[in-house]
Image (cartoon, rainbow, N blue to C red; front, side):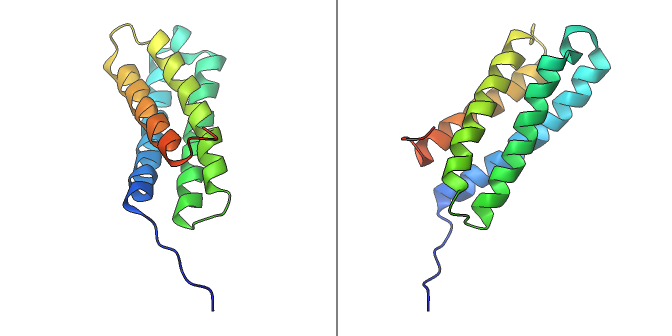
Length: 119
């Protein structure tokens, strides 16, 4: 019988951060659409959608301990890094954009600690 592996505390923190980033990106999309203009451009919306979807999937993969979870975390870190960069470039002191960028940056750091060779 195969021994069950457990989710480490570090992995659980990363899962929690995935869900936080997912939520932050979803809220930021609504915020951008309400503000309009450059905030609702396709590049910004695309980065938010990619990051939102990927962090949700990454969290799901980590929870079920998929053998591909660390590869997904690496790819997800790239999407979150891009999202954070775009959010900061459009923040202009906007707290919602800054929060999204900061949350994405925090996730990137966690993902890179879990998978330093790949992230």
